[in-house]
Amino acid sequence: TAESIFVLGQVRSPGAYPLAGPLTVLQVLSLAGGVTDRGATGRVKIIRIVDGEERELDARMSDLVQPRDTVRVPERFF
Image (cartoon, rainbow, N blue to C red):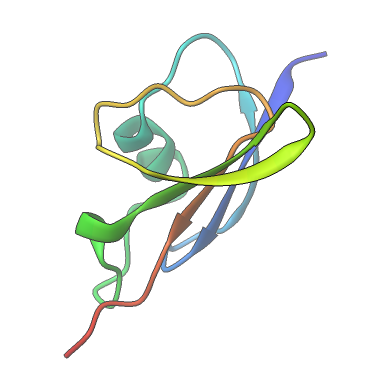
């Protein structure tokens, strides 16, 4: 079975997605239907478990995601 990644926040279809091969943050956001008009693409975070601890990393669109990562798109400020 394929590993999963999770997408939360201001995307059109949040949820779990299979990770079939290497994917970038941009590709993951595309799988989730894209960022909504309220999403802040400049403040996307990757939540990753490293050595048993949850870490929140600043994400660039070209960063590769890893199995069980959570990509979170926050709401932008108006």
